Image (cartoon, rainbow, N blue to C red):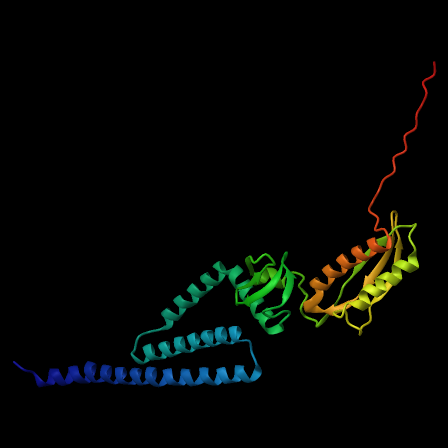
Length: 275
């Protein structure tokens, strides 16, 4: 037989409270998602104004979005009457365990953030770091991709790069070529210096400011060495260096100026055996 009092009790105890909780939980989730989206949009515009690197900004936005969604999910579950204290503790313990197991990844992440923020190099720069030299293809959160001169792709962990000496050959617009050119002791020093000067002056790629320098650097064991130091644009460095060496050799040969190489004289003495 239908019992109205039991139905009223059931409605007041279960149906209405649960329905109210579900409605409010839905509203919290629905409105909260839009608030999270608005916060991420504000952060995105802030990153654009402060010119934060795209890779770093996207990563930070994903982290912030995940944290906000996690807080929103906890608030929604609380509204439904589901206890979340133990859930938070489980997630905390899991996060600690994951963090301990990913120490190397966290080191690479921290180094990646520092590389992106401090910018010791950028994509397209020619660098030498962590025992690798080449053109930087991409700087990611955990690793940096470098393309070598023979077109190999090398993926280097960011912690290896940031913890090592970084040489950025593209950081400056100009570079100095340092050459040591040796002539023989019997050769004319003034003629050699005039010849080197003419070769440098004839190359339009060599900058006038700063001016090049040619100076006698050393009286070595087998040669008289000149320090030849012209300045060029960074992009022209290797091409100019190669052409200068070739032109110096050809011109020196044509003018009879020798370029000595290490030699060793062996003196043999004969000893007569006493009879």
